[in-house]
Length: 374
Image (cartoon, rainbow, N blue to C red; front, top):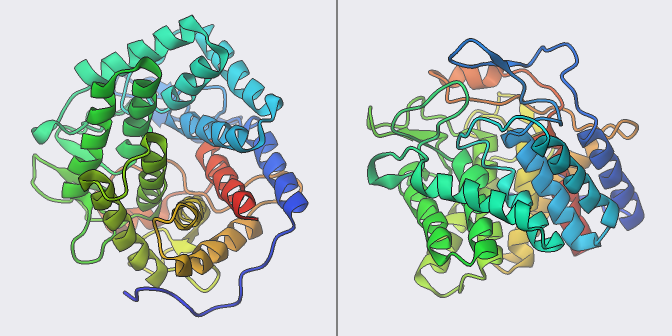
């Protein structure tokens, strides 16, 4: 794969006010998502059906949505944006508690942020309870990796690249809130363990998963959205923890990010999107992954983690995200539904497309980063 893509049209310059208005529409669409006809329910082992599409549910898709709102609030200071987070938690806390899985940890990042912003002891205690569960009760793989247990599968002995965004980052944020350096260190260690087993030495891209049971990468898919979680999470962890760039861990993660982005730049399509299987240009272009890449690459450049030349790659991705947002409804199109590790690579290319909270949030993050650079 080429080290940096230089072909294609020049990325468009976006008007600041227009980009903010589009971001606001993305937020409006995010909080309105409902699975009205129950077409996207997922099964659970005990036979129940579980909703991960609708906004008013506690799970990973909504956790990423909340993350997008928090990051946008950090830039704008808009009280209405933080109120959306406050309202969401108020409604969820009036309901029965969600099942505890690696994915349902995702809202804890926003929970910790809200607890700190409001000085709310009850929210702080809840964040502490979730963080303690991750540290003490979340199933572990060999080498004490976070086992990717979800609502419908235990995934025995499996590491997934999703877990860095869904669990490790929230644990780090909770550790800061609670003044628990051991929690922070555990979150950092998970980045190292996951890098060891999921980063592809041949390309710099990341496999979706690793099994300590079968000792392989399962279907060995270089899945776009899974890779985008990594592109997002590494700069965010470095920023969150203010990791020294020349320290052992900081330098290791930066070089990991650089290797991945060099490979990503070589497989970006002419329209700015990435295919849902990064090494299969015939698989469909997927907008949520592209939004994650736009965010991570533009942020990496802004923070000085990536060569400034990659700003072009990130800007082309941002253009592609904007092109896939419905200007009226604010919905991001071409977003693949929640994706397990499939038995075959071909199954990734058949995942249905639908509006999802994480897609909205990843687009919010991409536009937010574009606005920071404007």
